[in-house]
Amino acid sequence: MDTSKTKKPAVVESGIRGLILIIVGLIIVVLFLFVAIEFSGEGEIPEMAISFILMIPGILLIRRGIRNKLRVRRFKQYVNFISVLSITSIDELAAKMGKSSQFVNKDLQTMINKGFFCNAKIDPFANEIIIGSGIVTHEDEISLDVAVELSCEACGARVIVAKGRQIICEYCGSLIG
Image 1 (cartoon, rainbow, N blue to C red):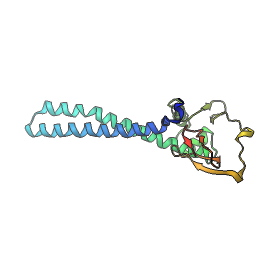
Image 2: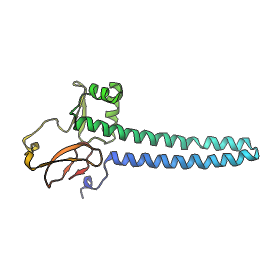
Image 3: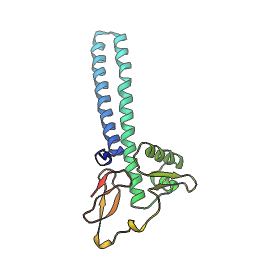
Image 4: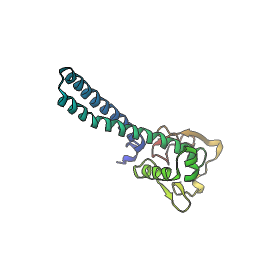
C-alpha cells in the first residue's frame, strides 16, 4: 500500500506536535504551580522548591512547542515566497523574512531534513533552494484554458493544475485537487 497518500505531511505533523507539546507543558506547569501554592500556605519551603523545579520540564515543553509552531509559520512564508513570488535565492528570502542569510540557510536545511519540503535541496554554489529537479519539462506545461490555480491546504503553495486532476504538492507532499 502506498503510504504517501495516507500519511500526513511533515509540516502538518509538526504543527500538531507543537500544539500537543504546548498543551502538555501547560498542564504540567499549572499542576505543579497548584502544588507549590498548596505548600506555600503551609510554609514548606523544600516542597515548594521541588514543585518549582518540576515545572521546568513543562516550561521546556512549551518552549519546544512554540518553536515547532513558529517553524511551521516560517515554512508557510517560505513556500509563499517561492511558489508565488518565485524567490529562490537564500539572500532574497532572508531579506523578505527579516533574518540573516545564515539563519535562513540553516532553517531551510532543517526543514528539508525534517521532511517539510519534498524533493528539495539547497544549492550552495548558487545560494538558492531548488524544489524538484529545477528543470521544467514539456509534461509540466498545462494549457491555460484547461487549468485552474489551487492552493495546498497544508502549506499554502499555489499551483496550476489541469481541471479535474489531483497532484502531489511539490513543496510538502500533500494531495492537491
